[in-house]
Length: 312
Image (cartoon, rainbow, N blue to C red):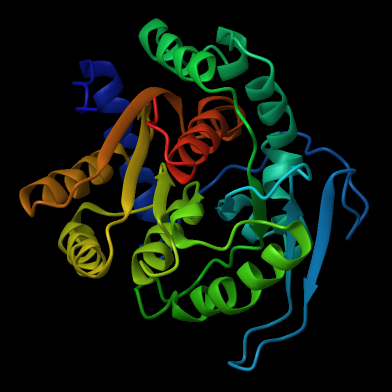
């Protein structure tokens, strides 16, 4: 979908927000603390979720944790969903529960199972046309579910491709095999995706595009990127596509401070002939957006693509 032109006020807000974030640190993405996160016992998973603990890795990585949700009725595609910096700075256990506890993923999945979606299901941050597209997709093909693995996502000091390599090895060599074994998830690359929001969106791009033999779909929600990195991300995507075709999507919102940088990366991808989708929806860069259009767009897009269906 082509990028929509922002009204002057929204554009000014986006640019001001980007400048404020950049002034804090060129190596850190920014996320506000979540408003009153849902209480949860450390290490305890709600019904339907499995708690996966990992010992320190052979490459020097510290102990890891993830939650795993599997539909249970049949082998399903597998999505790795990465959280933002707000959870990363709160520790391994909080981070692993970010999508479930802070972003309300259970509520998102329940609404996808019981369409039609209503404006309030997307936090009143959806245009009428986009809501109709989502509901048309659900009417044509009911949501059948995904395995979803939500690991702790580290706030890496080295934000390069090489800096994300250690976390990528954990995801590919340890998290995916265990999720498939314990959740009866599909193992084919065409049925495996990775996505994330903000900090997690950035790392999803770095890890997913570094492993096109593992991931058939790579997405990023409001990724914490810079316009100066457009060439780097495009080169990474080109190398990935030369090895295996990957479904690639960038999602941002009108008041996302990273929107100008995301548009710059999309422009460079298009200039370099890298097939991808850019979707811009209403809303800010915050937890309400994650619980609304962010979660809905991520889950439904991957469920469609990983099942060989046309996404809305």
